Image 1 (tube, rainbow, N blue to C red):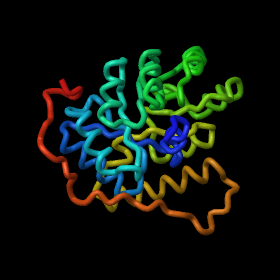
Image 2: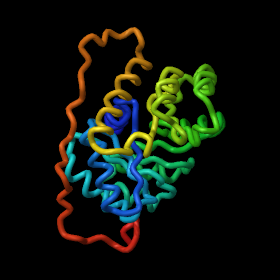
Image 3: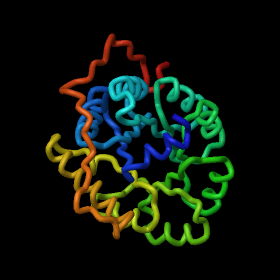
Image 4: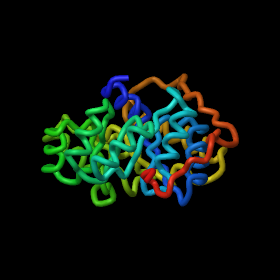
Length: 242
């Protein structure tokens, strides 16, 4: 897939699920729950122990049925290692030109962190594929409306403090998607599946309130089974495979 195609696919559901965990097993279990609920874009935080191994395992298991990206990418070496691990997109809490250049060098979209109009313009100049508004808790949906009035080319992805109830407000204000963590993934599989289905419907309505949804299409969930086939245990000493 081309970079622009990956970007479109990653943001198509208007929600990006952020996966963090205290261990490799916890992260893969959370990811499996989200995938089985029909969520198709997962961001694996590099703050998770053995995060790159999580990315590799999930990317191998899902194939083209979902997109696995890496989050918390702070510098070019981390970006390169995430790409080599199989990440299809990179997300950063900050704006670093080398992260963007590294991702683009290998055809991988990058969503850097921004929080001001100056940072937004700089990210656009660097070729960012979408802009992570972080932390979104410091702003409100109306801020996106104001920004997009002046910078309509800004594809904003609010992250941090987004809830199930507030996400539709951000989408209605012009955000391309919302990133959400434990508020989306907590609970058993049935609970998460119901929450995800409700959220996806509400986000679709917020994006296009005039659309005819008499016969909505429910995304087919990925079935990862009870456990992932992780293969030989070749995990290294830290999240970066060193």
